Figure (cartoon, rainbow, N blue to C red):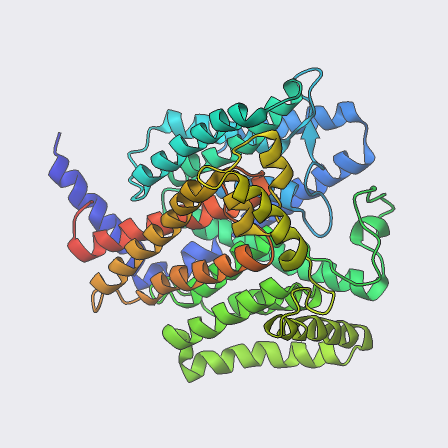
Length: 495
């Protein structure tokens, strides 16, 4: 076997895909058929889920899973199954798209079964994909197994459904294995981002519709949203938050790519504006602070500081802002968000409640930290008490209570390790890769993501539901892809 020749040919193909001017537009714009297919899948699934009986739902869901298993369009299906658990335009969401698997046990989210099928497909393909943080992931996996055993020792009671709950928290973590082995080229990633952009734009439209009409899209369609939807005088809707998180990152990343540009930056700018608008309209302070800082530092430390880019962004944002402020309902909601953001100043004066608008520091944090102090080194694991005090509103405190100092340091060490390795590649690529600033987007976004984790809701954990884990699997896997792509271009060899 001519191994050296194969590597040389692979390098040439990679370099052509990433640097040839003729490929700048075609790779990104061939994704429109995927958006159309995505819309068709969503509409049929919506109709079956909300308007037909359970038997029709099971048949359709089984057909979806079977079709995915034999499909090669990983971008389309990842976006679709993400939408079933993260929501689309106010429809679907956590536990909305489920099917029974075992009698006597709760129904399983369709996205959970998708994860298992993706692992099977990745194992069958046997792609020799190198992920630079694989050994670190193995350490985290071992600690997760320890947390399960430790949790049982700390007290784990209940029937088979309780064990099933642990399994459902574990399964989505397998995406860290399957995603980098199924998304093996630039085309896969960009096709996925195209669909995610569409989801984010539709989410803003659904949010504005809800604000202006007083009805969610589900209610407008005559569908009972269920008892889980809390009544509140304040407007706090934020649709498709996980998809919006990915879309915001992808838009900033693409705007810093020179060798994979497109005819107009209109779409990424619209996505950035849309996601920022959603965070403001939802009055979610942690996301507002995080995404504002991410945008600011991306402008400062990457090529986006150029006057041309600023003018392009202003051309998109100024007309939309004018339309927003011309509507009294939107103006009132923006003022409400501004007031909530301003109340954070009270924390510096010793008011941990932020004038009664915050429970994280004075109640939730103290409660969780009290549980952690009882078992500081390894925490409570996946035990009864671990689940009781695993409060997702306080990310770092919850991580401490469940995994202890050891697990806290290991998981946050992974974030540091990931950022450090990309930073090294950034410095090595000086004057060798024209779009090296796109690597900085990973670092800036990761810092902003950690702000959300620390202030608004837990993002990083050893277990989680698909809607929370998919963004992590996507961004870290794409980071691994970019890492090895950059090394390949720097050293001219496969590493």
